[in-house]
Length: 217
Image 1 (tube, rainbow, N blue to C red):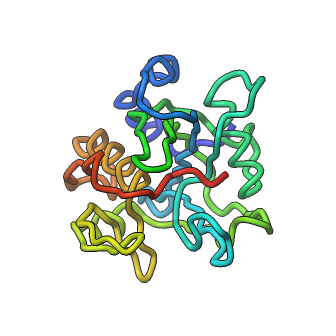
Image 2: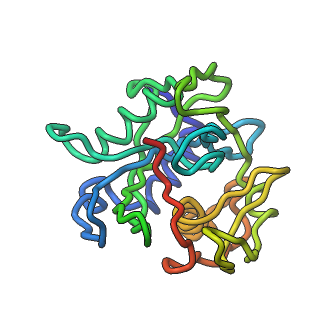
């Protein structure tokens, strides 16, 4: 089972929801979905792994999210959904993930998903296998760069202007449910002595995302 340093892993585990507690939270949404938040430590700094959707997809083209998707009937639980989707989307097998716990589930406002995020530690330096039909790229972004790129920005979605919490690293823009998940992660780890987690981040509003969802499937 992959992990970062023992001290980092245990420090993060202590501030997360247990898997059981996360699963017990009821949030608004017609469709249950789950995402995996893969973290790793490289050069003493924490990084997170994201997917960038293909630009030619009909729904959510080019958007950046954590690997994930909707719950399939018969799956054990939403953690199983997150792990399955991570393997399908980026080739990350479940046995390479040390599941640390969960984050606050979040709804997507227009698309009606209830998204359950689970955090897992992995080893750095993995070779990814993106899903050819869905994933254009796998992004590995340091938490310090994400925090440095935080701002409330004006976006136009479906022809309507919105002002929302975002993270911008180079030309990679993260917003909506994915930004809310990141905000919860940063809020939980901000008091820990971890590289890339030493600055507090405002919590993203649950009503400012328009229609972006954090699921990749």
